[in-house]
Amino acid sequence: MEIVVPAFIAVVALVGLIKKVPVFDAFTAGAKKGLITLYQIIPTLVGLIVAVNMLKASGAMDLLTSFVEPAAEFLGFPKEIVPMVLLRPVSGSGSTALLNQIYADYGPDSFAGRTASVLAGSTETTFYAITVYFGNTNVKRIRHTLWVALAADFTAAVMAVLTVRILMGV
Image (cartoon, rainbow, N blue to C red; front, side, top):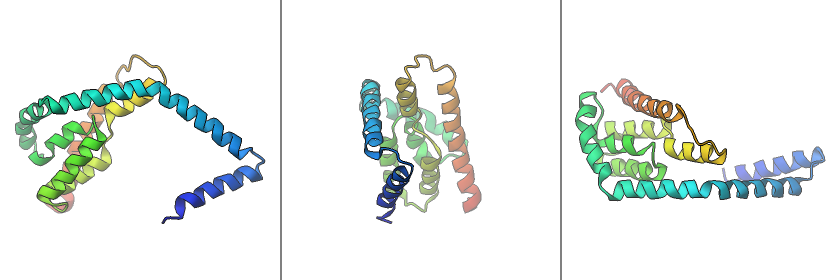
């Protein structure tokens, strides 16, 4: 397993040499473009990180969770995953921390653990993706992207619960 990445790099370099591509020049040109892209999106990412930390530190996330939990329970969502459902579109690392907490509290083979696992694998950090991609292309109006992406995240959450219920027989 440890050889996969070095082998891939070697194959790419070998194919480049066979096709007479200046491999190192192409690499440095790509690295330069990557740094330019990074420079362009850093201000937006810093803003997103600050917003996420303020959301968590202010207690707004806890308030939102307590507001949503009754409706989630009524719909059959395990209340343990509600914070993760709410945080996943905003913060990948934050939702991963919640996933680990669910594993520690309820176990990875519990209904909440399995549902959280499916949720983690089937949703996107929507705000991060929009920030990076639209920020990099200098698009200022995202039009319907946010609402469609959040609807997809909600659909993924519902399907995660249904899938685990069907497969576990809960």
